[in-house]
Length: 264
Image (cartoon, one colour):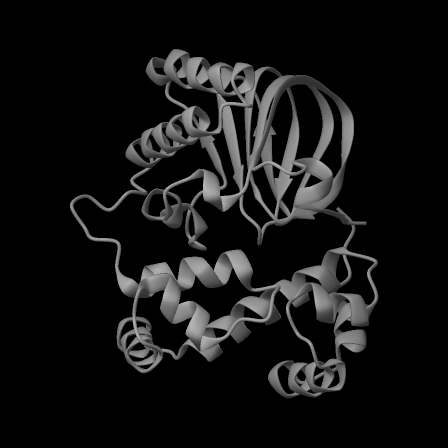
């Protein structure tokens, strides 16, 4: 069953944790409140992200966001692992990696591996130098984006992207229109209009979609109670969550879990 990893438990009071380590055997299925990069130097195994299986081998890089579920099976591999809060990366650089279509596993081209490994090793050695690590993480993401067409060339980081990025990083919390507008530097009324125009959906509907999708994943893969899942997904009113879940999916969370519960 899935384990919840908090920023406090894995990163502590800072914004980054980085290490080179050996993975042996299985790693418990987990989800977390931060971003994670795992790069395989050598060895093998299986990496599952959102119930999709990827081969672990030299040169493979895995990227997990706060809305992904991750586990490792039958591993015998040397990896570099970097966990970081969103504050460690420029929003316009990190944003493309949060889209649902962004790849979670990437085989780094042979010609780029020395560069990638050098940057990752520098992060491990200098993880206490926050400003330096911020620059290195941004460099890594730009390199990944260039290899996998994730960075929009010569395109401004739009107001709606700023707002959706804020939602993805804070959907578990109580979010107001004022906060979302502030993230984009707009007034609330103008932010609401811009979001609806650019996204073809209002911000509350978008927020609900993120939260309900996340709640379904927790019902599918975790042993947490429905009340815990309600809170983990950002819903504050438990009876209202039950009622709205049933209206949206045609059955209660408990009945949905009985039909769809999986084991990673």
